[in-house]
Length: 297
Image (tube, rainbow, N blue to C red; front, side):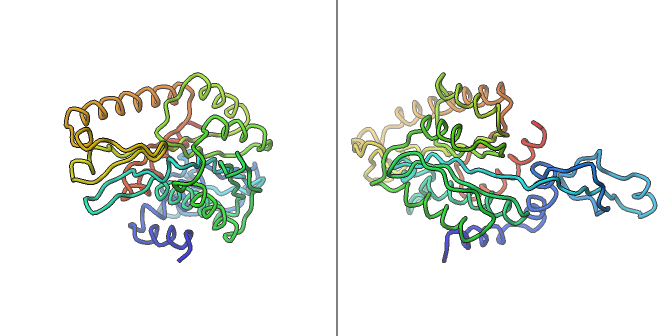
């Protein structure tokens, strides 16, 4: 089964109403551009802008109708993915095994990419390959989106180079010249001065949304008797440390503080953001993100 087929299957397993909202109203009101040329009327969808409601026509019809406009151009959606060996690490733990961060990133990238292509928009990719930061030409073809997802997977193995977050974002600055809607898929990053600076540069040219993926608390599998090692360095965590409740509390406090600082920075910059740490909530978290993008705009 292809990676994109798996993404579509996950979408199909969710309730129809939320998924329809993402595919229709929420996406259209957030990402689709429009000219001043009126096209026709259609039924109101969750996420539509209230200002688009035609109240007179709605009164005659007996239900809410919104004005639909002719799109002035197709949009370009760019998935900027901070690939690297760290994404081979775990983000969630089930007791029988873990869920790699890579899987959450591929799901999010696949969902966003497929929705864009389904609406006739272009989808491109910027990521960290073996040879360094690389950009893939935007496309409207599902086959090319599948190849992008394979690139993300193959660039996020234990043998891959380490993540280079700032370098990947700086490459996006120079590689993507035309205005685009960028989804930055990153690890559980700390936004320092250098990273904030490149985010500001991207904001000048593009619409941004940041999606971060959480790291698994290493003491969780450690307390279950599993050997634990760091995905980035390969260093083993001593068994006594992995089973330490004191260490678990310190890790939780540090992670919470970092997430709070990141939220405050992104809010200050006016960048919509989401944090993924539960594979069962990825679709819902993306729905929430799209709503935030609409409000930020």
